[in-house]
Amino acid sequence: MSTCLVWSHRGNVDVDDSRFPPEVNAASGQAPAENTLGAFRLARSMAIEGVETDTWLSADGEFVVVHDRQVTGGLVDRLRRIEVPDLPTLAEVLSAAGSCRVNVELKMAPGASRELARATGSELAAILLSKGAADQVVVSSFSRHATDGVLAAAPFLKVGHLCEYVPDSEGLRRLASAGYWAIHAWVGSLDEKSVGAVHEAGLAVVAWTVNDTSVAARLAQLGAEVLISDRPLAVSQACA
Image 1: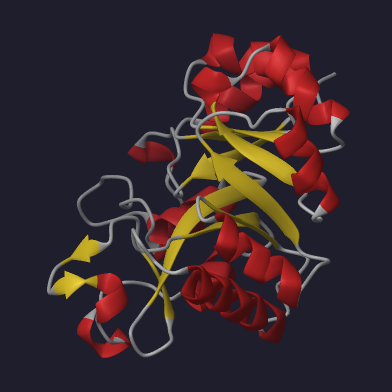
Image 2 (image 1 turned 120 degrees about the vertical axis):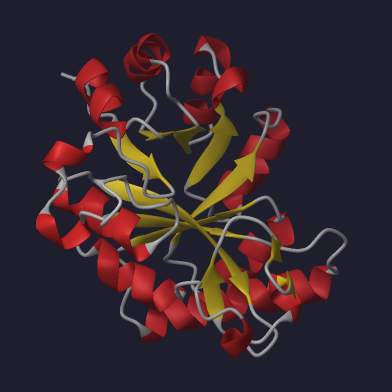
């Protein structure tokens, strides 16, 4: 039996509206938009093990949830929380997700300095600890400086190195030595050799974004620990 876990990508769930629980059934009869509180409540109601989400630090120090940097009104990291009232806060998402594991992808602006990235990672760790969420979350980021900041502030948190392609063996060794938990790699870069290399380094494999059920089944057989998917129910069934 596969031990591979499946997490919802930004709260997306492959379920028709007839199965929506009343508390998340939108008036439109459509699934809640991704990265919204309704989406995470729906994922929780369908007993999905985990969800992935994106967060930016606003100009006044509030972590808000949205994928793109550009939002109505400007760049989200240059706006105050009051200027983006329609975006949920990370604290609200953690609450909406309930018992689900939450993979928090920390976003950083292109060209952000090493110092800013590390400070932002440290601030995220402090917020997660203050919310008592240490056991609920996994943190990842394309910014190695940001995740280094998370680990410096809270070395016991599960932190993943988010990347398109799996690093070479020396890179994997260094990540493991630095306290990283996993490699969060693009699904197209993963095969038997790369999955084996990650495991040999003592790291877990988290694959994104896995929507093809045959690919999901193959990765589960190779021993991938987590698959992030827009179709978590179908992918879970394929990995069973």
